[in-house]
Length: 400
Image (tube, rainbow, N blue to C red; front, side, top):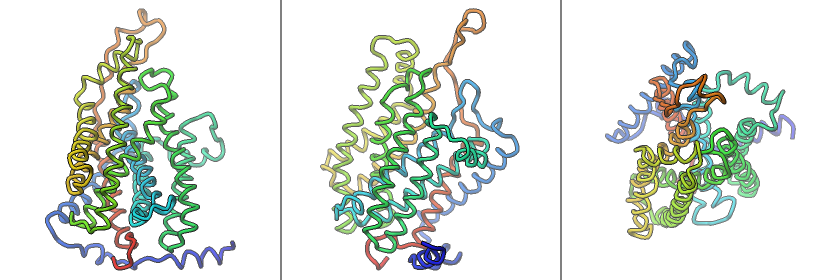
């Protein structure tokens, strides 16, 4: 394929020409106005937070040598988990051929693109030198580094998602299936590898092991279904047509199974953490179990949605929309807990009686700069998604 063919291919991608006036021409309801104000405020916070970071560096963050991973890492994980989850949901139709899910393919795949871009935007101001990273990621690859594989695989995943989305727009389902399947496999590999970043931490017994590489895939699918309910709730203003209701009811039933499996995962993780009183693991497990953030995660992300699903066997689509809003808040607690709980127990020198006082729990509080950049990432995600709904037809029908 030469340059001329590439230009011709790009020129035939269907899209709507949109002006600034078109972007501002939304229905001025209280809900829409509130969302617009929040997006603008979050984007302003992002600019302010980045400016403070560029001036002061990591000193603007609440991280320390004892707690080097902070809120931005948790938010990055939140976004890439959301991206992988939406990729899985979108693949149900165009990759695996389930006709009831074809209607969500374009919307979910586009959502996977904007969420991972938002995650990249947040993490860019955590790693210190993102441009240098991109250069040496290619020149000096670290094949034994889980973080190197994470960056490489997610870069490939984003490329395949964009290509799949283009073929979906062009209604070329055969090519969309090929690139969608490849992107799904690479995305699952990248996401499982992200779990291995924690699983490979030999110095942190609370995280070390095979749990997180598999747990990340499960929670990604759960997050993707929550986002599917939220997307369609806003798309149809909570007045779901018959075909959307049928699809969402089926997703709700799948979600009930996934949440039940997640309860099984979390229960055995906690039991194996505390059983036997293993040093540097059991006491951390007990401390986590007694924290309010852990129970916020469990109640908001698991118990409330599962109760709504079981009450009506997944048929209460409106209730699942609100349960999904609760679930996404719980998922954010889940990501924060994952990062913070890993670093609760301070690492000790070998001669602790001579050089180090009796260790206490490591405390961490995100700085205002971290909070602003994190909320800015959410603003970027919402803004990109809104623009995408104007520029592209994200529905299965042609009359959007």
